[in-house]
Length: 279
Image (tube, rainbow, N blue to C red; front, side, top):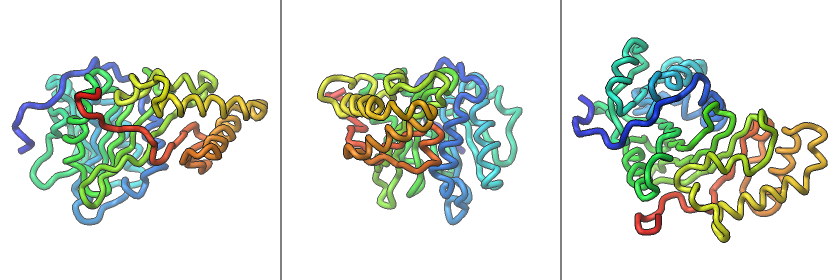
C-alpha cells in the first residue's frame, strides 16, 4: 500500500484549465526525451508524476497522451491532496494511468518510484521557508538521473518558469537549469516572466540578487538586439539569448528551444533552496 502517513501539504485552488501545461509537456519531450523513453531496470515500473492536478485531471491526462506517443509503456500517476478530486478522477484510470491521494510525501507502493515529477502552481502558495522540505521529500522518490520540474504558469500557460533539478547517481540534487517560457501571444518582454517566478525566486527581485541581475542583463540584451524584431519575435528572442550567452550566461542556444520560446539557463547562479532563517 502507499505510505499511510498523512499527506504533507494543503489543497490548491485547483483551477487548472485544459492545455495549461501543454507547453511544459512539449518542453519536457524536447529536453528529457531519453528519460521519458527509459525502460531499463527500475525505470520500467517508474512513474511520471503530476503533483497537484487540480479539480479535474486535465494536465495528467494530457501528459499521459503526449508521453505515450514516444513511450507507449510509460506509467503516469496523478497525485492530489484533496480526496474528492482523486475520487472523481478514478473514472479515467487504466493499467498505466493512476490517480492517488497524497502530497509532497508521494503515495507510492513498495518497489515503485518516479522518473520525473512535475509540480506546477503548487509551491507559490507556501512560505519560502517551506520550499526546501518539499523539495527534499519529492527528491527522495526520484530514481538516480530522474528529474524534478517545479514552477509557476499564468492561468493559460502562455508564460511559465521552472526549476529543473536532477537527482545524481549519488542521490544528490543537481540544479541543472532554470527555464523561462513564452508563446509570444503577449509579445516579448523579459519582465513579463517576473510575475510567474517560482517561490524560491519571486521575493528576490531586488538590487544585488542574481535573479534581478539576470533580468536586467536580459532586458539590456533585448534592447541591443531590437533591430531583429522586424524579422519576428522568435528571431528577436533568439538573438537576445545569444547576446546573453556572450555576457557569460550558460544559455542553451539550440533552435529547438529558442525558436519555441524556451530560454534554458543552464547551471544558474542562483540559490535554489534557502535555509529557513534566510527565507
